[in-house]
Amino acid sequence: MKKTIITCAITGAETTRQHNPNLPLTPEEIADAAAEACLTGASILHLHVRDANGEPTQDVDVFKAVIEEVRRKCDIVIEVTTGGAVGMTLEERLQPLQLEPEMASLDCGTCNFGDDYLVNTLPMVREAAEQMNRYKVRATFECFDLSHVDTSMLLIKEGLIKPPFHYGFVLNVPGGIRYDAETLGIFVNRIPKDAFWTVMGIGGKANLAAVYGAIVYGGFIRVGFEDNVYFTKGVLAESNAQLVERAAKITKDAGCDIATPSDVRQMLSLR
Ligand code: ZN
Image (cartoon, rainbow, N blue to C red; front, side, top):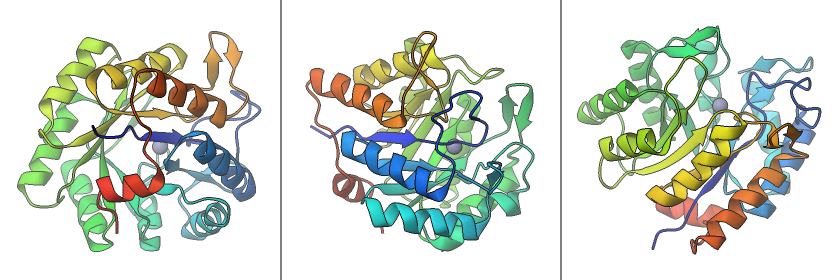
């Protein structure tokens, strides 16, 4: 039986200290949170970084500093974001690929994002995929909508992304497609048979439901302050690791084994 991968998205671009005062922002705080998450069962770090003012940035030097700090503290697989933050240009968003990270998120289409929207036209998605190929980075097809799954199939057909395939279903973004078990089932049935997938429910209620959904459908889990800052209704999480710890317990209680970073490197054929 394949092992369950837990990804932790510890900072994100839109979460602030107003949402949760325990949000890690500096390179040191991000590295400490990553190491703690790794210790409790996370094997992939989905990484966004912040500048000195705590604002989201795709600056390659900031990414470099944070990645070095994380590497000093743990062996977690690093997936950099190329989604960046609302309003960034594609060129800006793709900068961290130059550091040749093991993995990167690949947004597969345009969508609503709360009161804002994310722009990913087909030429932009193709350009991002080409750069990931060039730097030998394993792409995670981030699908905020079913149409994004269809776009991923187009990229595969065009030979832009090679197997093994890894998907991230981002469900319950305000203005986007809901999370529920039925909807997740439709996503799972649309992707290539041998593809791996991770589901993230955005917001407290959907987040925990998606952890259970991943177990039921045999996929992977993502938790962390990027997606949800609550532990239970109205109660803020103390740390990212607290969310990882619960996801790991649910996984083990369901009789599944948790993947280590080296399992991930093997399963996803990372460079
Ligand atoms: Zn992200």
